[in-house]
Amino acid sequence: MKAMSAMPAHVAAVFDACPAAARERLLALRRLIFDTAATTDGVGPLTETLKWGEPAYLTEVSRSGSTIRLGWKASRPQQCAVYFNCKTTLVDTFRSLFPEELVFEGNRAILLDLSTPLPEMPLALCFSMAMTYRREKR
Image 1 (cartoon, rainbow, N blue to C red):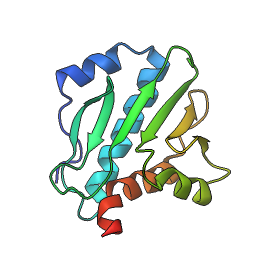
Image 2 (cartoon, one colour):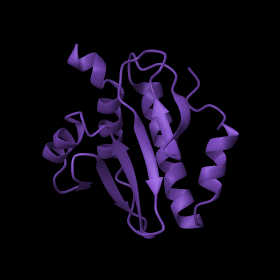
Image 3 (cartoon, rainbow, N blue to C red):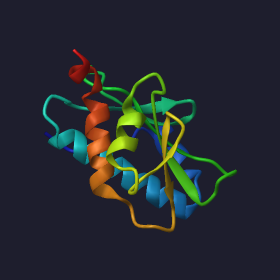
């Protein structure tokens, strides 16, 4: 299975509108999302689109998971965020697994400082759990 598909133009435009440091971090997160999907059983291909004007990744084909969305806001220029559906227990689960490794915002986001290394291992596990959330609930 091919890990990463070509980025749709409307999604690329959002990445291109971000400052360089934020764009680099968001693209690294995108790569990690696709790599995780490719190595997580039952996830299948991802749909890459925009939700609320931000890049979003859905398991539309397998319907195995919950949407993952990436964001950067000018009001917080040194951070980007990975958003999850606030009606799930995902962020609470992530908080219990990675209380020291990750920073959270409420029950909907992981916040990432642009100046620190990307915590790939914890994030990959979070992404895998989000991509299989519906399957695990069944």
